[in-house]
Image (cartoon, rainbow, N blue to C red; front, side, top):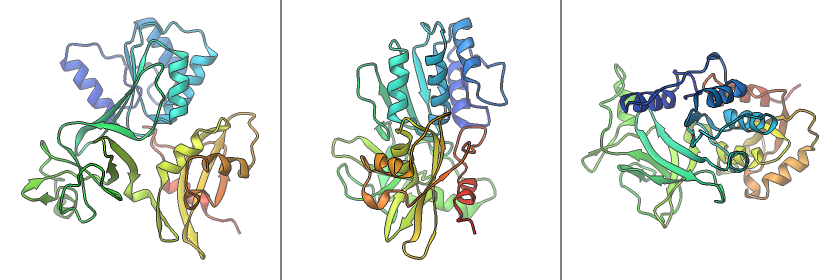
Length: 312
């Protein structure tokens, strides 16, 4: 059952892979938004084995509905997440609530197909942002001139070789930037920054387009979001940059708290400091009633920047 709308590539992938494999595709009755209780009713009623969600935007309300309800989820084998980060805390809660299932994080893009995955089983310590590479996945250096070897320093460009698209129809400039030829090999480079750890695993850092350059250092918005999302009071969060006289750009967290939760800005920053270097910590917390996301669950960074603008 793909819970994401079919405008989202991950929903298409799951549906067509399952359909061509002779499986049954379940489409929820409510299709204009994610309704966790509707999802769980269908899992219980139809014996759904696999559910596709989009990161914390779907994962948090889903686990809250499981914890608050009394659903028979014995058929559920795997929750697959793609398109946005599913934080370690939400994974732990899901596995505790349904200890007979596993969680799979999928990494990929329309330009690359599936590039990497991470499987978490009950009893394992959940992490976010670490993946096992699939065939053809590589990391290119800053100039996109060579492939980087495992254990390299710094951030590179996540890339894919093999079955790579010819380009974007009618846009030669974007095609040239996204599908470079390096050493005679054609790659797809959709814009994610990454590292290859010494053991060959992939460490996803974040999308380059939402990187915040603050005080001469690069901060990946997704990394700060994951650190704040682990606080029990945070319902949702998106991180962006805003102009700063001192830093050039400063990190700002736009946060929606859980109902009836109370927490100070200092406590939120202190929680993020447990896993982040000081220069990555938010310089300001902006509180909102709800974080605006696209219908597919992806963060709306343009909206977040508007919220982060200082008031007169």
